[in-house]
Each structure stands twice: as C-alpha cells, then as structure tokens.
Amino acid sequence: MAWTAADNLHITLKFLGAVDDTRLADIAAALAKAADRRAFDVEVRGLGAFPTPTRPRVIWAGTAEAPAFAALAAAVEGALGGLGFPAEERSFAPHVTLGRVREPRRDPALATALAAAERRPFGTLRVDRLSLMRSELSRHGARYTELDACRLLDA
Image (cartoon, rainbow, N blue to C red; front, side, top):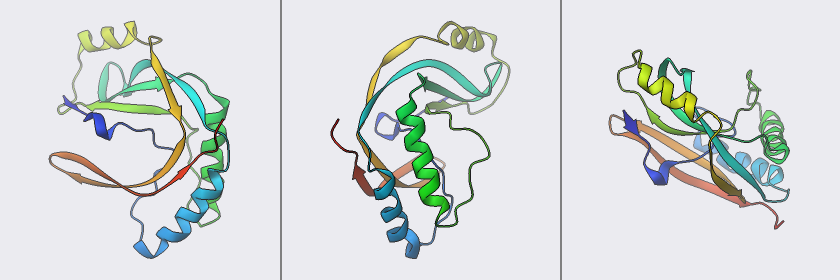
C-alpha cells in the first residue's frame, strides 16, 4: 500500500489532463467565476475503494452529501465547459484518496475493515478555496503544484 502524503490530500472537482501552459490564464479566470460563491463546511465520512472494496486499487474517504459542494462542482464543470473541456460522464462523487494498492488482489480483511467504516465520521472540512493544480506522476508518487487559487466568499 502506498499512502498519500498528508500535504497531498485533496478533493478533485474536475481532472483536466494535459493542458498547454498558454491556456492556464483562461482556466484560472473561468475558475475565479466559478468560485464566486460562499465557503462551506462538509463532513468527511466513510471509507471505500475503487473499483470495489473486495478488489481495491484506491482507498478513499468520502463526504456527506453537501448541496454546496455539488453546486461548486457544477459551476466548475460549466466554467470549463465554456473553454472546450468535455463534461464528466460520471456524476460528481467527492472523495479524498488515502492510498493506492501496489498489487491489487483480494483482501478479505481490508474489505471487512472498509465495510465497518463505511459510514464512520472523520471530521469536518472547510471548503474556502478553489485551486488549479498541476500533478506530476513519478515512481515515488504524485507531486502537486498549485498554479492558481481563488478564495470562496466568506460565509
């Protein structure tokens, strides 16, 4: 198991893939418009795995349903759609990647532990900024660099 470093924990609203640097200013401006909304709190709750708890590749912590979070994701989707980024095919499912399984295999003990924590509360997260991030993958894991950030409005 490769655990995510604490300073790499985040929730992705939209993955853009490889983007030419000449587009970054337009993306940042679009995100600033999407960030024109109030900051909010969301409860981090429950553990799970992709693709399934019985054969995990990614271990994650989810969030409680939060209309403000869904609205922010929709605003980001709309703002970036206006720049030609294709819409997500899956519905928004906010989660924090906690770790990645190096060698996926059936692990009944892990599946049992995930099921036991399926609804466990872990605390509250303040969502008060929207960041444009660059991720660079290496054999040592991902390295994230913040390229731009917008503060959400004070609640």
